[in-house]
Each structure stands twice: as structure tokens, then as C-alpha cells.
Length: 374
Image (tube, rainbow, N blue to C red; front, side):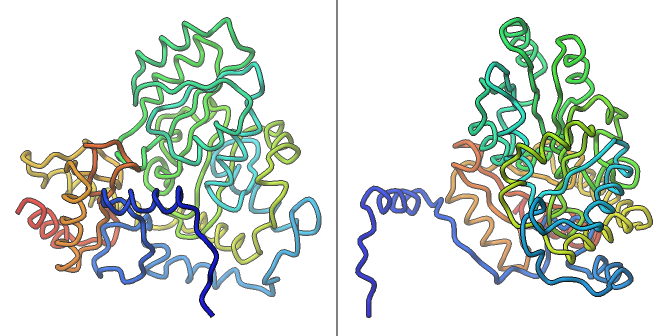
């Protein structure tokens, strides 16, 4: 029997508008063979490295966790893994969340209070924006990576709010560029504010043993909180907020995305533990860095790439149709790259987003750049 429920016209019009400007999202699973798109920068997931490490940790585990961590889902394994994460990232404590989205929404929605101010980079990840919107704090965005714009906002509002939180990504997911973290740290000290850094695209790529950009710049202790996501270079799932013992205690009591959700199963915890063990002994980080350097050295000056020394590289190509056509052209030659269209990015800032991996060969890089230049 056919479903006769009526779909609201306003919603149907929104879908139609997406179709008309070639921005309609669809799920796919038939990916081209040569991977220049996934966030599996070190091959921990796709090349089985994580699975091999995980086998050595396997023991009799529960398939499900049976409840939230505050009810029945907590275990000694959670405490063990969180302690190891905090030690690895040189801080007092960490708190695991089911995903990077949950971590960012939980942290930003609960931490800043009414009477506080959040200043965030205009290109910050959507999960942080959603958390900011759920907060009772006042919030303003500043121009991307602009120390000047950020300081002007700080000067204007320094005496009007109780606490000020500055929120940035260390490596931006759509541009691949770095945040000027040292300069921002200097501002936090001048204007007595708190720095929150999302290291989602820096962990496993930058810093000693892939500890991230904050580690590389030696500013870990200058951050109020750092967020590490495990669905990218670490090849598994979940995320943690790293910071002080006081911060962990607060989030356990007030972060709704932590309190009101089923805890991740033990298999996920062991995968995170295995990924951190791998970080300290793998040579994949060095292989990735070699590929990043090689890619940058091979770039044609005629191609409009955003400057980046991360694993993410983007070539700007205006228009949703244009980037879609380029994605399809590359797919015919078995290259898996994704077009990023508006409204995900600004209109006229559409792009092809290329993610480099430790397992990409120089020949693959050469052929990809050749096809793009044609």
C-alpha cells in the first residue's frame, strides 16, 4: 500500500531549490578506487593497521554498553582510556564523547554562561556553531584567521562580559590552513580570555607522534580545552575533550550530549586505545608528511589552491556545477575526490577538496594534478 502522508510544501520547496542549484546531498557507497577524499590520513582504518593492533587487545567484551555512563554504561576501561588520553596530550584529564559533534555541542552549549562571550572564527566547524547557538552566552564571529579583527572584538567587549571564550580549529576542515595559535594565545593573556581549540584535523598529522598543532607549538597548557576527534587520522570513532579536572567534572554534570546518551561500547574504547598505541610507533605520520611536501612541490602556479601544509588541500573553482563536473571527471579515472558546494562553503568559494594520505603514491599525486590541470 502506498504511503499517503502529505509532505509539507515548504519542505518540498527547499528540496527543489537544492536540486535547482546542484547542491542536493545524496548518500553514496560506490567510491572510486584511488582515495584522495577520506579522512583516514594514516590508513589506520582502510589499510587494516588499526585492526591488527586491536587484535592484540581483544578480550571478552560486551557488544553493547547497556546505558549512559551515569546509569550503567561506565566501566574501568573508560577510566583507563581517558587517563591514557590525558597523559598523551599532556593535561590533567579527558572525557570521552560518542563523536566529535557530540563533544563540540556538549562543550559549547554548556560551558559559556549567560553574561559570557564567545568569539569564534567565521570558518569554524558546523558542530561548534550548533553548540554556540545552544548556549546562553552572547557570541560573535571574527574574520577567518584575522588577529586584527579578533583583537578589535576583544577591545570592544573586554569590560562587558564575565568570561570570554575564543574558539578556533587548529587546522580548518574546508581550507586546510592553520590557525595562528601563538598569536591568539598572546591575545588570551592580554585580554584574560579562555582558548578552546578543535584539533580534529591535526591529531595524527602534526606534533610529536601526531599530538596535534598545540603540541607542535608548545601551547598545550595555554588552552582551556582541546577537542580530539578519532574518526579521522585515528581511523576509529568518538572524541574527547581534554583539559583540567574541574572541566571534566563540570562536563559530566552539565554537558547534555554526554549525560543523555548511551555510552560507547567497549569495542570502540579498545579501538581508541589501539589507535593511540599505534601513534607512538607508526611510521605512517612521516610518510604522510613526505606526501604533503611532495604535493606542495608539484603544484602548478596556475591552479588556485589554498595554501596548506596539512593533509587537506583545496582548489577553488566557482560554481556548484563546475566542481561537480570536475569531481565526475576525476571519478572516471578512478580518483576519489569530493566537490564542496555552497551552502557548505560560501558562494563563489566552491572547491575540490583533496585529502592526502600516507599510502598515496607519488605517481597517484602526479596523475591527479595532471588531470586537474587539464
